[in-house]
Length: 261
Image (cartoon, rainbow, N blue to C red):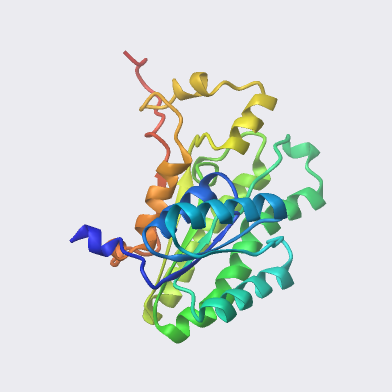
């Protein structure tokens, strides 16, 4: 039954960027389904508060490990700490990411590199390190968090769009190489998901969620929980024959053609 396939009892999950938004919603769902969860972010107080809430609401252990995912040594330490505490890793959610928008002609090389370090290199390092343990276990599920920008591009985000597209191809190749080890790797591309930090960014840019929602077929923006639903599905046994895929959680495709009626 599907309920049995969504049981994460005895499993251990790492969620990067797990203190807020999509990462927090995902970590909480995994914990409520029985997983022991490790979350990381750079902000210690916010991270520890999130871990305490997850543990209280789920009854499962949630370990907070302060980590800058752009620091390779810190990511390696995160994986080592997880294995030391729990003995295994069954799920990795590469959720940490983000961008600062700007016209292509104004993006400095340092800014371009920083976006790739945050959105691609961090996922590569975490996947490589976690993969060592998953390969030994002959099992595991990895879910990378991309964006619609990686599928369709976005003006003012040449670096971000390119990075998220790279993450989607990294997903495909990792799935192809590691399928023989029983490891599945999939990707979820976020659309207009109204997480707290995204809402703050929209406000700075003068964008109203209600107005943005009118351009989406479902006529609204999405929520972190709706993203978490897809992430948890990909991580679960319910997706046991799905790997190397990217699916958009975006409220539907925006198409040209006849005016809407």
